[in-house]
Image 1 (cartoon, one colour):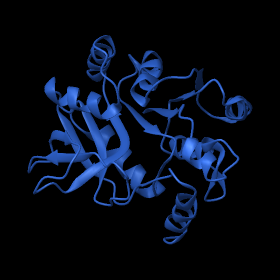
Image 2 (cartoon, helix red, strand yellow):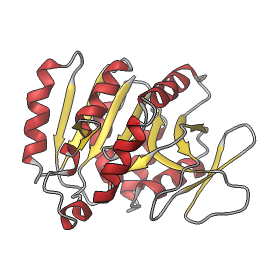
Image 3 (cartoon, one colour):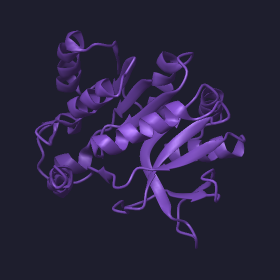
Length: 238
């Protein structure tokens, strides 16, 4: 499996709240969060890891370049400032195209390793009719959650900005996709579509077979208080 990390955001809320380090280097569970993700990907059998950081993140780029030689798989680094996470994905897509299935996540998505490993196995073992598998959660601690509507068999039928009766899940910010998702991404870029949630809606509209995978609890680190919350979450089961 190939993996990608979107780490090109500014982390402005953390800066405003007094966190000096760039978000990808903030320590979670004793490690920089981006390093923790890479470690997990490697233990999940990563064939490659592709990462995008913005132009201002010299510390992060230096950290990744120093880390790369010690990894058992290629680390592909893109340094570019982009307007949205969807545009960041577009910059990474050329590195992932033609490599089969891949899993993409934002850098501030925190989960337990065993839950993620189960998700990777499920996506790797899904039949060829599955175009994508999105990690979802019933835990809502997001300012603007993206609700995920599903059919009884687990197929995703829609991505909604507001809750509707019967919806169980929100997006976990982890996207398992196949090559079928790349042409939809290019079309979204050409048409001026912005934001990952609108891209996901486009995937559904294009008829792709997307499945939901409940990954239990997932936390986003958006505020300074989330750092302590994430640490407690990860250590509570150890």
